[in-house]
Image 1 (tube, rainbow, N blue to C red):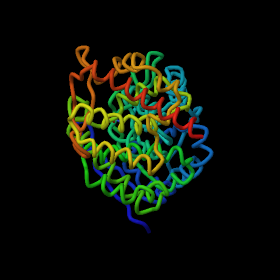
Image 2 (image 1 turned 45 degrees about the vertical axis):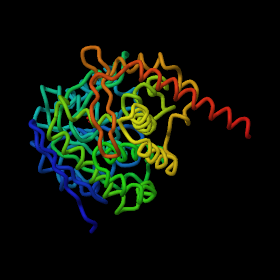
Image 3 (image 1 turned 120 degrees about the vertical axis):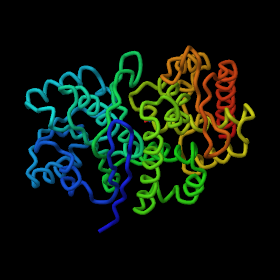
Length: 383
Ligand code: GLY
């Protein structure tokens, strides 16, 4: 039997473990049952994940005598809405679930965020377990208790901090994920090296291809390292009053790009984060805060693994400095009308810049757009 790694998250509100290993879904009851206050739960999943993994989970729980109710929602970002939350609440009430029963999120970030938020408000808070099925959800969104839905005004604007009582990560489920999704998740893995662990970045430089190829030892190590890094930060700052904002390295640039792309799949969150992290390093280098050699090393890694960079984006998503600055002004990290950015002094040394210089950031967007335009002209001329 392959090794199971355990990472403990210990924020003030609830201490819980993340179990990481191969073949855990068919043995889910062994991990989940100790955290169920009653013998009942509801599994919330989406139509795609249901087709791939639901039977395995319901059999595992059923064999252990656990009563399961199942709710299958449409796949996609549009599911993180008030409408879907309301109809899920109504279904759970019709199931006559109690506060002592648990919701199990089986899926990616959309299902995890929606289910977590539903758990936080169902009868003022019921049990909650995460079984993330995408790499991105396994290394980021399923850990740390951020839950919520989108508003017409923006993503994740309505929500709550609500920690799960267990996170079960079966690395085998990644084998059904499209390569594009694996790469998007890899960007969040890389983030942990770039923000606080230069040695992990060195390891990714050696082993990035093996991680993307889902080689068992490499992928398990990468997930466990990422979860440990996130657990450390979340345990220190559950409600993002300080250090937790570091987990947003590259995200302020990324959110602006995502807002331009719309949320229909033209640009995945992890793709935007990949481009955004390179921009955070380039901006730090341009400001003389970080050696240009470090920014170049980050971009060389992205290029080698064919991860998204600003120059890969369509002119519509590259948009204009004014549009991006407008999106950045809405960022949740901002305070008192000041723009907050996560920048870097070096690989593995991110820091929070509370009053970023908006003129310099505007000029940086303009320079990026200009450089990308020149590159695409060169490509056409030389074709
Ligand atoms: N994804 C960033 C955080 O959980 O804080």
